[in-house]
Amino acid sequence: MKESKVEHTKFNLLIWRNLPKCKEIVKIITASMDEKLSWREWIKMKIHLLSCDPCVNFLKQLKFIRTVLRHSDEKLVEEDLSVKLSDDARSRLKKALESADPGL
Image (cartoon, rainbow, N blue to C red; front, top):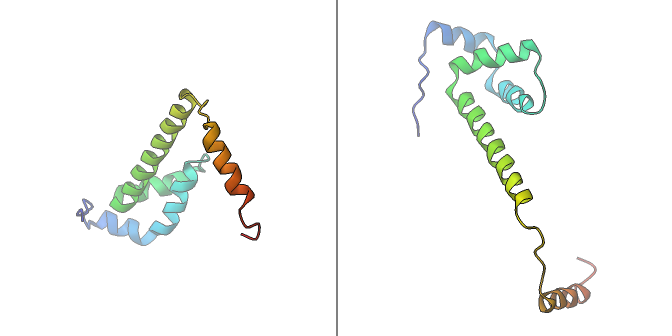
């Protein structure tokens, strides 16, 4: 496991004591992906991120996931979506659906 880069300085200890815990910051980071934060939330988050490697990693991972999903969505639009089943496959699926137990 990666060692933390954050040192236990007086500044960091002060921040850890007086700012919200990681659990609340994670909620703020997540909210920041969908909406504009209030200036208080933004400042809390930024100051917390100065002293907390796990939260910095969480933010990086969240941004990475968003980027990957955005690019995959763009590729889906670019791809030819006119893929069709063969008549044989369509017939087998239709038979399977007709013979399926409706109670499931």
